[in-house]
View 1 (cartoon, rainbow, N blue to C red):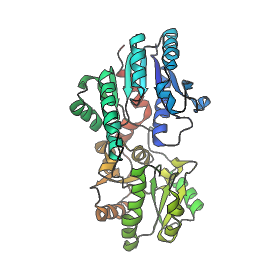
View 2: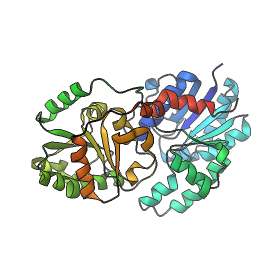
View 3: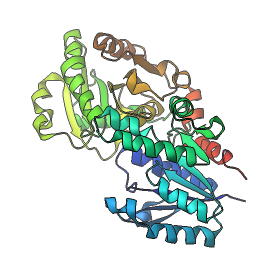
View 4: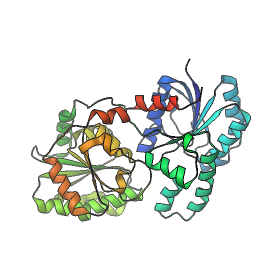
Length: 371
């Protein structure tokens, strides 16, 4: 018999644009294949896009959702009426609601984390991070089970937040791919035609939400440190930068068009670009949690060159030589690694898919739940 599960997601995930939205949407999709899943989320979701589960868009889409006490009565009544035994909170923000529901219903409460939230906000200079720290610590300790996005986060929770080791489980970001894709060459041809890239030029990719400071700073480092070194090397290449919300002062990177930089903006199919790229670069030096774009690039059989901080949470052992990690701010070595790996093409190992395929991840998540 399938387990009956409810989940609370406090923001829009359908349709998804960011890696975080995609992570939750695809986790639910694959979890719904193996369980009876109902997701309670915000009114700005397109619930018809939900695959393999039912979405109830009962939350306000404004910040008032954090004070929407009526959710307790609606969700707890639904849980009791449908015999649901497990409740997942995506992120700790609705912890107060989970606590109330657990007191009212006979359920196991799971918090599915995607980073240490207060550390993420501390890293981007939010002065109120200590308030979030106290709340997040309470939520994680109060929960019956905590899903951690990486082993690094799991160890931090155990050591620094005093969360019981026995209830912390690594449930990482995943991919809908069980093995290496076979259409990489055809995707590369499509992207070359779209952007006028010559056959002899390598395709180097960066992708991310560009009003998020860690990603924007990465773009700045590409422009001021990495690209000048590649220009000096004589390498034939183009760097494609994808992502929405590039600040206006960058002028669509038009000033760099003659310096092998292509700004593609928000593309309709980022998977096409991941498959097309020879190298994915990730010079991200701050932010928390696993960088979903690294997992996606590796899954689409694209070699990744990453700064050390940007690679936190990604399993180097499972990724093998397909993932190259460079010390933060060592741009000379970073550029040399790009050139070297372009001359040594290798395939993403099977061990990567064994760990990062969504079907395997959600099966593990279900095995963590008590009967």
